[in-house]
Length: 248
Image (cartoon, rainbow, N blue to C red; front, top):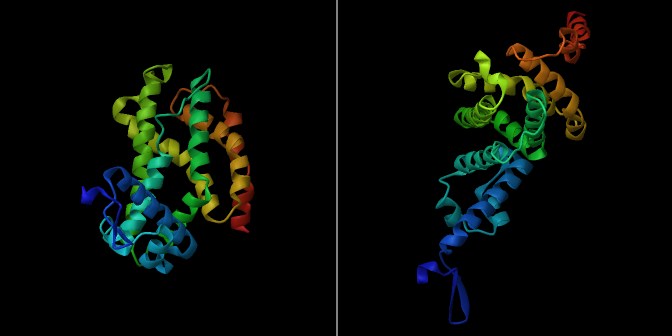
């Protein structure tokens, strides 16, 4: 019974004890919330376990019992964020056509990515890539592998209930590669703009037209789009001007 009490009064003094099993998860969430806050404010190098413990109102032994060090804490913070961002099971891809359903899915994914927390934590990992290459590699792998797996599962469900299942790109063994291509086309351009400092609110306002053009281009590439080629070229209309600027 003593092991399951959060505190024990001895001689009028309240002493801490091990939290009940039902509260253990809350303690860990509180630690990760505090760690995310400190990492975003001070970066990886400037963050300390002491400050994280203070923000979390938890002792350092409590933190080290769950996370062996600062790198493990940062990895856990990113892992939790990726898990939240890639929880696609609850998303209803509504729409009369596959293009509308994929557009709805892409809009949700981008809305989750274009947040201060996501962009900030990616920047922290990139800033430490030279000093902590394993950390940056781990973050990069999580940021690509898990979204790809989640999206491949959704694509598999859509392929089973839509004509796109006839496309070779949506064959079961091709789904991971198709999901990666989709993410590169839909997410990567907006993500790069956000990482280089463009206003997140302004980028989120562009999600609709960006998704519309990207999904149409994606489906055409998979052999199941109906959008005319001249319309598919519209999202890249600024490229000639950019090339001239580079050449100049």
